[in-house]
Amino acid sequence: DQQVKQNSPSLSVQEGRISILNCDYTNSMFDYFLWYKKYPAEGPTFLISISSIKDKNEDGRFTVFLNKSAKHLSLHIVPSQPGDSAVYFCAASSSGSARQLTFGSGTQLTVLP
Amino acid sequence: DVKVTQSSRYLVKRTGEKVFLECVQDMDHENMFWYRQDPGLGLRLIYFSYDVKMKEKGDIPEGYSVSREKKERFSLILESASTNQTSMYLCASSLGKGLFFGPGTRLTVL
Image (cartoon, rainbow over all chains, first blue to last red; front, side):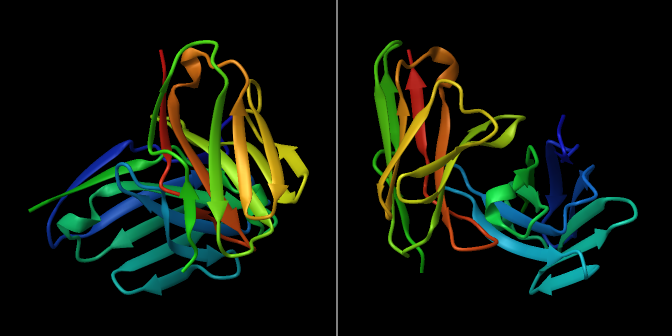
């Protein structure tokens, strides 16, 4: 049973437009959420995180929104750039510890020039 | 910057062979992890270690074992490789909330 779901395996967006990647979770004990970005033949790199005490966290072009009642988080990238093309994984933790991270299946984002 | 290195980027082995995947981190992190990444399945935790000689099973430990003799080094062992272990293997280390990943090893078992 997948506790963290990314229902869109792929997303294509035009350069300069907004990319919205979605993630749903089922475990109400999750209290810390992260997004990772992965290029082919490289390991995932940390992008942005959010604690359950917040509903929004912003870092440059990247913003993560958390809707606890809907058990939903989203990553917004504005404006999208071709270099953002990668697989994006969302992850959730119930203890605030990396030991308990549960990952989604990933969304392949393609930003078209 | 944290650096996590893995001994091989690409590896091809035959069914039944014993396979060692090595991982080294240089930031004195307590926790180290082995994941595998498969299309449509995301990252699944195989084993993790929170201290030297300590290990815990993750979600999919069957067919794998691990060794942590030194704090900076965490090895994943496939005792008898099988074709369903063809995958991308990712090592990670952590001090707290987030993970720092190595570049991955693409293992093909023929």
